[in-house]
Length: 297
Length: 310
Image (cartoon, rainbow over all chains, first blue to last red):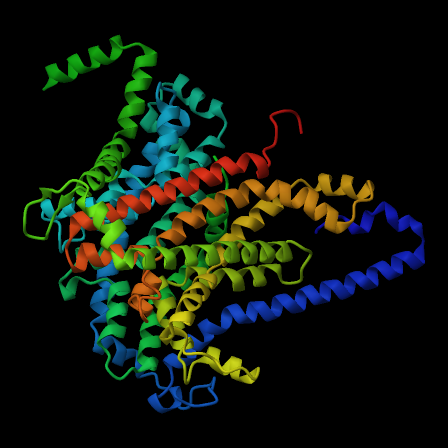
């Protein structure tokens, strides 16, 4: 615990006690550090192994004991993987869905969150409870009727089933933005109203410019959700050329008869890299965002 | 055109302030309200109705009453298997990921050298795209040349054929999930950091040992966060799908045939949409019941700060 040891009143008990205590503490802190280093390595090894394997030749993949450094570096695994399945095309498809989904999210969610946060009207609090309940609804319950609905509308083999719902707002994103908007002082909106600003004006000229971090968080979550989504593209897209990267990667495993783990890990690395780069650039927002989802309303 | 705009503005001006606000509120909410009807309320009602029907891919839905439910509960040999698999998974993965995530957060919440570095190391695996992570673990779990069995070999243990043996496949799937505990850890860490320091200081002055402070301050104040994550964890684990679909396709010997995978097969491989809907409704009731139980139990173990001064 981060209990202020340095100002501990017990320290007055005398130097010998203090000495013993700090030795014990140093020992314990070293043990904690050591344990964390070990588990940290355990968590990162699979990722290193993925990259290492992606650069190995077919023979070196099967080496026993396993070797960490590729010898030689088989960079060809990457273009070969992209030739085995049209990964470039799949990447483009995933990107298209992701971008459209983000646009839909950023158009709809602020509007809805603003109404929940700063417009007072009857029924609002009840609807907010409904919103929270839908966050907890198991998604699988919706699967079949939604599929039938989109099929009826002729949306099979289009990106609409993935993209369209974003324009109607995602409960979790609405909730996060609403919580953020609520941290602005009430007088902010009231004063603007006195000056004759419309609600739309308050949202877009005052609230949105002040909500950069929250908007970044929901954008990152939206990107992650669509880039990783597996079930929806699996169900709604049958045409090979329309597949997303996530589904394409699955077929990588299904199609290969003699498994070339190097190529497969190259493909997995290619799918993971954009998310890791995004994380490296916007680490703060990832962490803040996840922390926010754990807080209650 | 100008006339109608004019009459609109007259109408707007005549509207009272409160009514105007109400109108605007619902106007702003309208996308979500439409979505709520189309993508949530309608599907819930529809899945209930479809459960009473026979509905193939090309045919028309026909009403068969409770037949689907009767078949599931009496004739379906795999239903209990799949339910058992799912409960096994939930019972193992929810407590494990909670405990590991929480312990990591507690460890990270001490005065550490390189705290950010540790946090990153534990968090990064949780953002690796799921399909990529599963393929990676299929490779790590390779019975002959996999890294995990090599590590076990170093320890003098003989590694099993993880994904090829019924008794090992489920634990393997649980382990894949545990790789992503970093997300939960971040949530717990945020919770730990929001515990006011003066509580610990006061307890220390009163002579409370560290263990006691942990049990009497940290744990109670973290129960709301733990509670929330427990609920989300249970709901999520009941729907485990992608790991099993990609890694094992439900095998070997149906040992990783989880509920949603089973439902998916009926819905999208055999196209028995009515039967799959009945399965979905049963899962919904199960998860709902469990959630209610956890909510009910919460009053006895979840600590809520009273509204008074603090």
